[in-house]
Length: 64
Image (cartoon, rainbow, N blue to C red; front, side, top):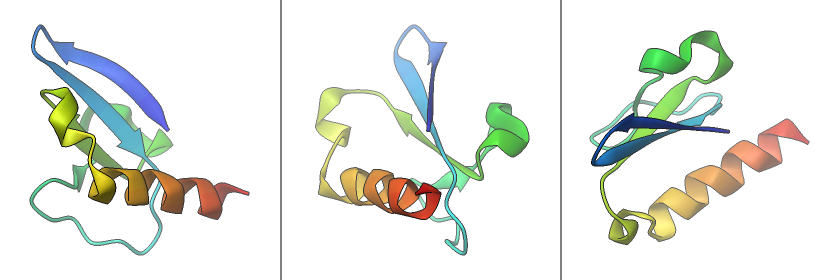
């Protein structure tokens, strides 16, 4: 997992998620290149929700 300040109002969270399709919030890795397969743009703390936490947990489980 990588966290990168992207703009004055957004951070990008990079995740390595095997066999997970891109969707509305779950984008291609973009600036993270090959280190991460996906990224999520976060504009405010309300976007750190159960769905995002489940992606973080899934990425962690795949890495151990």
